[in-house]
Length: 192
Length: 137
Image (tube, each protein chain N blue to C red):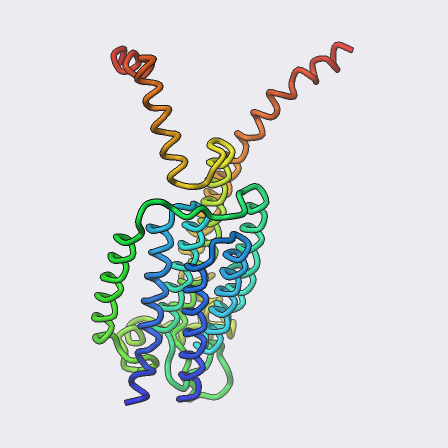
């Protein structure tokens, strides 16, 4: 058991070093690659924390599709980040203070893996017990996702649809200006 | 002692990661870096949730034949599965906003964009464009 926790501590420390490298780098391509690596290490951590479904979703969606989106957007954007004139002291200070408060509060959190923690008492045991009879599939995560909390998944679908419509609406305006420019040519063709 | 330190180590590093993400969002002036910061923040929150769901000696929540198996808590896994997909939708929306800003202003640095806005604002005041509109309303 202790080895599992050690692997966790090691992986999460790797993630910390990747995040620090992200603060240091100013080149866009390194930023994108580091973000992808961050997601991939997070997926490894999810496996050691027993969340296999989350791990492969993170590896395919977080490390895969996000990186593709970033790379596609990167092609149209400046390749270097300009160092800002204004000081970063106040944001850094407020983040450090907030982080200190969170770490101070963490002493009240239950230790990792305690069976007596409040999160394991309330509704999860019922899901684990009832899943086989109610739904009839062995994967409890799937049965909770698709049946017990189906409305959550429905809401998620609506959110993704709205985001897709918004992305289309945002990117289309660029195309219409192009179309306006190219309209005279079409008219000429029709006349001819 | 070592065990309890490791038991709480994850939380500390995850809080540090969250703060690094927050710093990238509020401290950096490059819009692309802000979105990367948002992704970092999201992933660390996912880690925090999954860490809560872990049980010592537990297995992934997939039912097997033996009776005395301890399963890790499936509920955080479900919530985070939803959150990952929504996170990608957020990233896509943010990136398309950045692309629009770049095509409109020719820059994705916050300083440049706000400077151009300021110039436009003063031009409007000098030509009396904004004042007329406000007066009519």
